[in-house]
Picture 1: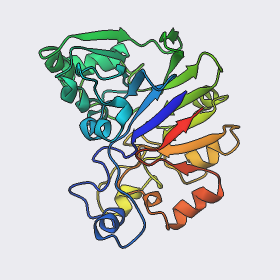
Picture 2 (picture 1 turned 60 degrees about the horizontal axis):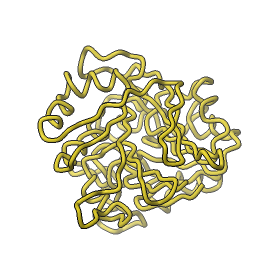
Picture 3 (picture 1 turned 120 degrees about the vertical axis):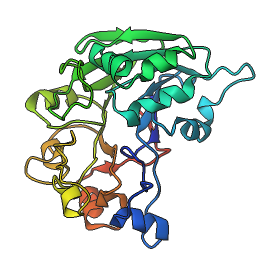
Picture 4 (picture 1 turned 90 degrees about the vertical axis):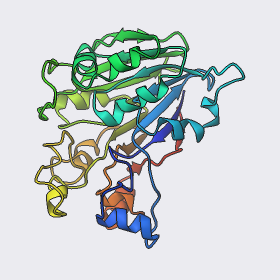
Length: 297
């Protein structure tokens, strides 16, 4: 199984267009070692020919152009088989509208996510006005064969983040995915958004070969400490990395070959290669995703 990190930043990308936080200033000035990043999305394949997209960011056009394996053939056919959504957030779904020129799109999502995309943001109804959309319902806990050497199981990720759109069910509002190679049995867990790493969530991660996990914020009060917002990381639906109940400590004992932070907010100091926080992750064996990272399992 192969994984391509198409985008590794949280919503807004890095640097964020309207932000002057230290990491954004560093990237613009070139004063410290760091690289820009687009908004979070990955592509997964069992054979490097048929690919599945997990989340469709607003940067999807640039991400496809940067990855020749996803370029169209002479008949304008792109080797993307389907799109899987972890939630209905705009940074994970706006890219669907940019794929409207295709002959059709297969979208996998929970009923809660479909409700938000149809009657909340209206993204799905707008997309369906331009191209055929095949809806595939994702049921947490149910294993589904993809017929290309891959299977997946989604799992519910509870959150009490304030909902912007009413009507969607709490259950299935956010999910993670375990994608497995049906030949080797090895698996990837993709979990770009998680508010709390409960025992139940940690059980879902166990036994995977690679974990791509929420690395949005270093501190719970990161935004407030920079004077940017009064919300905590958890208020925004993300477990912070640091702290006794942060992800770094909770993931430490899990026997997973590679643990990689993804969906990194522009304020997070781990974006700076020479920061103390980044050095601390290096010492603990945790990786930080960058656009273009390729992983073979």
